[in-house]
Length: 280
Image (cartoon, rainbow, N blue to C red):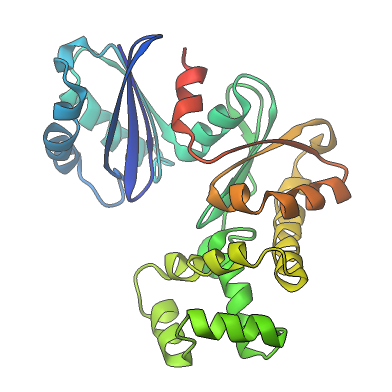
């Protein structure tokens, strides 16, 4: 039996593949090796995961784990050790969630895989492995096209008095637009990117307004130019997207790609189901 996982910092989606027609779903907290020791990960999986699987651990033959934070040999080894202790008969494969996104989006064909959620990332993929990756610089330096950057762009427009009056009024009525509150959540909280990404809900509700649509389109144009256009042979590859931001703002995303002569591929909100397809 195969155990396949897509793990972010807050949530892990699991699929235990017993046969083509029998798949068990499970969900746990995220297992980012930056925050977990091997021992703590083993303890947590025994408590949260094993009861949901409902099979003896010795019957799991393969584990494929794609996880946030699994980008260095040390972090991969930490996670591998946790799985070896938990599933003693299994062959273990651990890699970064970006490879998981690429395999979920592209399958076994070449393409460009893009993540547009709270944060953003991208890579070129040859059908099996990542061949190039323009680095993601995170909330403070990058994350173009992501929910956090969209929210940042919207809040700036509000405080710089660059919003149409109808949008400004609606925005102020929906949120507590107090500069001190904004500053506290951006500069003093642990997850400023998640705070800023919340404003994409407002943008999705008002996407038919030309001001909001053009704002989203400019942000996606920034992502396309800083990330997608840097890959070799990009004009001949499908461009695929993973994440809720890509899903909800598809129309603006398609316009940006069409203007650059790029081929729009597919959008997948959650990678776990197509990862199962890749491995079976």
